[in-house]
Image (cartoon, rainbow, N blue to C red; front, side, top):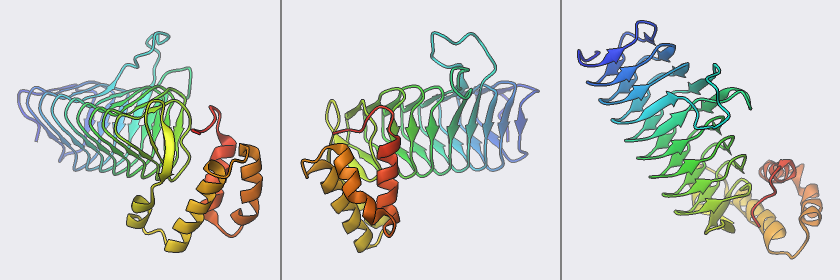
Length: 256
């Protein structure tokens, strides 16, 4: 399953059915799980752990050193879950010692061509990064988030679950769960209602989320006042609780 023209370090650990294309280079301290397909002209460096049934297309660079001026070659790592797809020229960097020394990617994500995941990022599961979507360092992306083409997320920012970043959005603050943003700088426009329907949210849940969004973004209340108004609903509406808790934890402030 390993092409004779590939270069695979003896210190790499590949499951017996992993496929490796020609002219690919896999360095030491790389582990690749069963069912994974590594295309031609790929470079994977470690320490990197890649789970099962991942697909890496040609010219991707996975697990190389972080693009951080403070990095001095310390041992850091990249951890990737199962069933992810990395299309052409995707780049994913390891962590730095200025955070938890690890970049993490969950399961079932799609990274389209030229997507970039910087050092110390934490990407959840079921996300979509359209072409040229890029994360700065230390960014967190929640499950089911969608990043449109040419979007950029500022370092240390957080994007909540089910959020939608329109193409070309420049995100400089945290994006709460369910919210759609667009523009430079990105500003909120609505909730991701269509995405929530596709993921099985009930009409009542979507209505609750829409009302919470309007309270925060359309009522004219200060943020703390809006959250206080929403708090009584949270006990019986867990989808609203997620929305409130994300905003309360925000370190960079949320898009407004």
